[in-house]
Every structure is written in structure tokens, then in C-alpha cells.
Length: 147
Figure 1 (tube, rainbow, N blue to C red):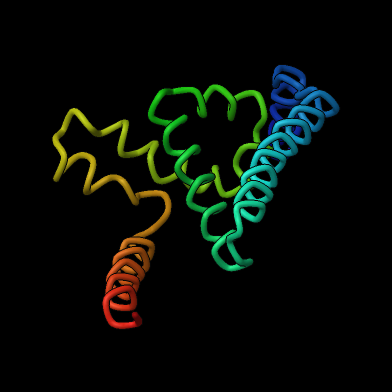
Figure 2 (cartoon, rainbow, N blue to C red):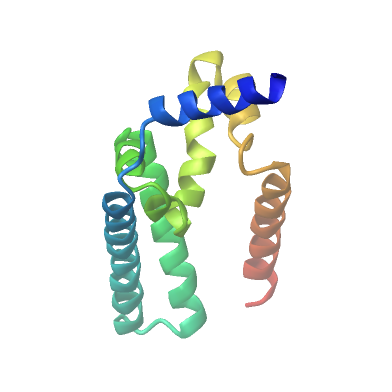
């Protein structure tokens, strides 16, 4: 009897649950992801045409795309794009920036230390804090002593 009730409930839930428009969602994800990647390619081509080598071009592209993702998240635009595009906005590097900035924006009223600072890396993980911090320190040391 218990098994029959579970089957009936499952059928009821399946009938009432909204069915996603898969083709439309896939098209939006593909389009938005393609636009983000096209912007990244434009940045890369521009940096390359300005005479930067391959490594510098890659770094510039990553920095610009993370900045754009964080900036658009701060303005509330990236979240609206994400609602429409789904994985198309999450997969590129701009989605990474969004995952860092979103919790910080949510907790900014709690202050910069206990709000923004403490909650910024909730989704991305504390490993990123140490990775970024170490890379900045190593970059500064390299810039000072490599010349």
C-alpha cells in the first residue's frame, strides 16, 4: 500500500511540476555563451594586435573578462543574464567572477570585513583566497626582482 501511495504522489508531482522549454533554454545558453566567448576573443585579438605576446594576451583577456563579469554582477546585470542563459553564462570565466562577487554583494550591508570579506568566497571556496593572495605576492616579487 505504501509503495502505491508513493507512485501516485510521484505521478501527481510530475503532472504539477513545470516542464522546462529545453530547446529554448539550450538556444539561450548557446547564444549567450557564444556572445561571451566572442567578447573574450575580441579582447584577445585586440591585445594581440597591440603587440602583446601569447602569455600576456592570455593574461589580459582573463583579467578583462573577470573584471567585466564582476562589474556586471555589481550592477545587477549579470544575474539577469544568468536567469535567461543558465549555463551559457556560468561556464565561461565571467561566471567565475559572478560566483565570487554575488555573495559579496548580498552581504555588503553587514560591513566590509564581516560581510563582503567573509562571504565573498563562500561559493568559490577558501582555496581561491590563498591562490589569489599567493599569486599577487609572487607577481610583486617577480616584478621587483626580475628586472
